[in-house]
Length: 191
Image (cartoon, rainbow, N blue to C red; front, side):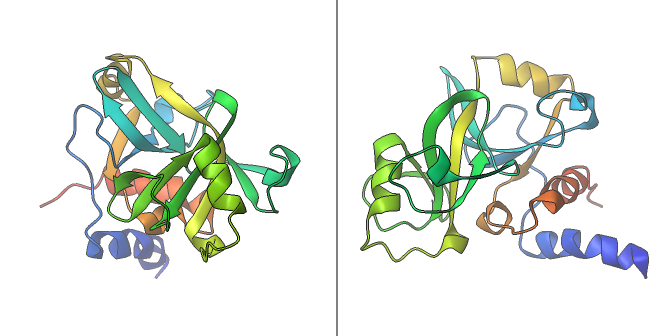
């Protein structure tokens, strides 16, 4: 019975069509899941949503790093909301990942997930006409980034696994459950 309980989240994800990505090179709309090879580093047990993957490099937002702080403590004029650590690059930069935000200033990541950055993120969060629910918005400081070829080398040596991204995972309330479930999913072998 315990085994079935442990496998339940994995089965649900598989039924939703979320599974391992076969990408050897990073692509937009994929979760990068840190492997045990990154234990002891700042990326230990981290899940990163790739938001840009181009010849000039790859950018992403860590989706499972709660700062334990409120966004209003760091970004003046914003109302109370949990602040997540998007990554070590530019921790003073504001980002929002939202599900179908009603704004033209957004960048599609995958399916119904959009990224808003800087002034656009601030404007979105302070606009009283927005009817977004807190369950469909996550606020981040900073991002992750790799130079051309750097992430491919890290994937090649086994530092990261990849899984197709999904909004239900990004907005999962139990962020501690995100990494183990996605790592297990990434390592699932198909018959």
